[in-house]
Image 1 (cartoon, rainbow, N blue to C red):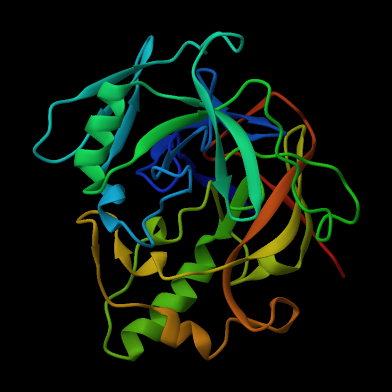
Image 2 (image 1 turned 90 degrees about the vertical axis):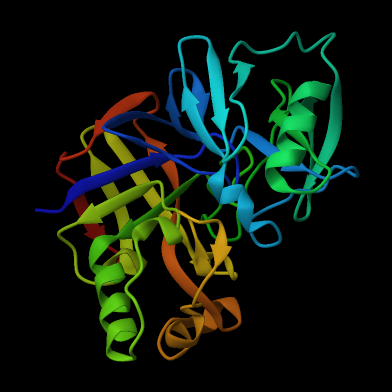
Length: 283
């Protein structure tokens, strides 16, 4: 029986994740202690999203959820504490930020936070938080018309990957004289054991207890899987190996690993590592 083998929540887009034993599933993605996946984002002076694609050192910014704060750590820097309580939407400073083709409202964190995050990233930037009044609908092109929303994820609220898919890729890398890669290079929220390699590509749904997830779109890959999440440096890029068998014609030949998913049942239900998953295939 397939089981949920790993859960990772990323409070800040493109920074380190937090490994969890259990989590709450919501339409906006993973949530724990009232903190949502990719609820914060780093932006430049014009409000444009910054990621490890341009700034691999972001991998070294490690968040920890405390009782009342989100604690940030980075090599050679003092820790920073960010209050977890939401600002007052009526009075808190806000700005419009851009993520790909979307422009959404966000809370602007203070000057001290901006200085800290700029030093950690190595470029002038600010940290913003998804605004309580903001809404970011996903593209329904891939959801069969099902309406869904997300925060600062690339496009959909939950990313799922199978451990056998990584094993398959690593076998090819090792056969080519390369090092095997850890799953964190691909930054999924949920990892499934007990399915065949890339079987997640062909799933109609995943049911975990009362939670039902609908896979909607293969996840196209940029150069980020070449960033070593432990060092914040670019390393060997697996894209050339993936080019031989992971190009998706329906995405104009994009190289894909993992499936974006949306929640269609079980809002606010908890799931845990080791829980059995019923995988329904689309054929």
